Image (cartoon, rainbow, N blue to C red; front, top):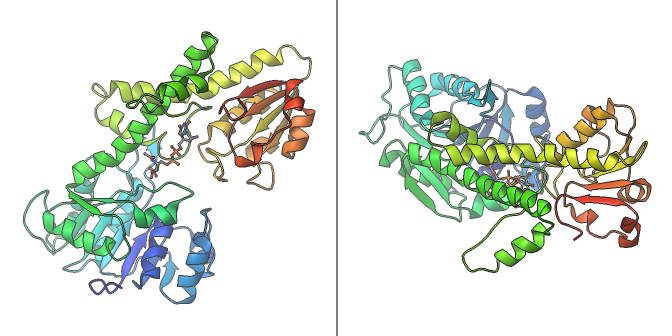
Length: 416
Ligand code: SAJ
């Protein structure tokens, strides 16, 4: 139970803000959740959730019932503010800080001496300083910290979220946190807040390093996956099974290659490296190339399907999985969706879609003729071409004899 913060406001109740608000509230901190989406606010106040994350609904329901978490569309005064709003692109991969700007301007009138403002949204280097400048411009009556400078009325910190979708409640508590304080005192103040629920460690740093650390983690993973995806193309050309190849190479004590797939999806790994590229385009050459390699992979998969489809007059093509990764229902920024949509649009034949984590065909696919939402068994039975896009555990056990009669494109190496 925190004694230092009478209450906390979390701005942005999405995939990061809502679990953070809920965890704080379970540890006795009264939380005011703020979101511009009235539907999200109503859902949360009814003890339910508008996003998908295992076990989250039970936690939200508990803290709402206990009166520890309340959602609203209008910011209210608190001792600490955690900003967890989206940082999407605009134009050609240019980071859009519009939501961060709007969030900081919405809390600025409420600030009082001693308050803590934390930015958690994944952000380009320099955003925390920019946010501090927005706050300072709105509140000339208060003093704000300058990077590494002296004490000020308001504490400002960048603390990136680093949790894995599907394991958020666990990782939120167990992972170490990087605390990028505008001053050491800011970092100490934020650590006190995170330690109300954190079992991992708070690693104190400055905002620029903390912003870059978050981008670096996801760019590292993107580059490693791009390496695996590039290997998959080379291996195919040279008639080598890429998964056997990687298994063997990974037996070396200092080699650890990730897995190839149909492309890289989600809202983090496929996005964050661009924040580095955009800032330093002349220097971030490998990071940029990795992005392009991973973005091209879905087109390669589509091309392979088209080549095989030429053998049939009206092939039945089964797409197994739409989610951006296994065992979740998140279809946003999914390479599998991109592939399925392309195939639906091209109308090469009949398209059978299987996604065990959703109940109906997504609108983007339902609008095309010849697209059907079917069960895994039906799809495998009826298809001429079986395209495995997501390694959901439901797809693991398949009738191998049935597959022998079909063209199988296994983009995840699940059935090798
Ligand atoms: N993927 C592969 N091959 C692999 C691993 C992943 O093709 O070997 C693909 C997945 O299928 C998926 C994409 O990459 O399409 C991203 O999946 P992921 O599981 O690697 O990552 P995310 O986007 O779900 O979560 C990442 C995590 N970052 C790191 O592991 C460095 C998470 O810790 C971050 O908090 C999250 O991004 C975020 O919010 O930034």
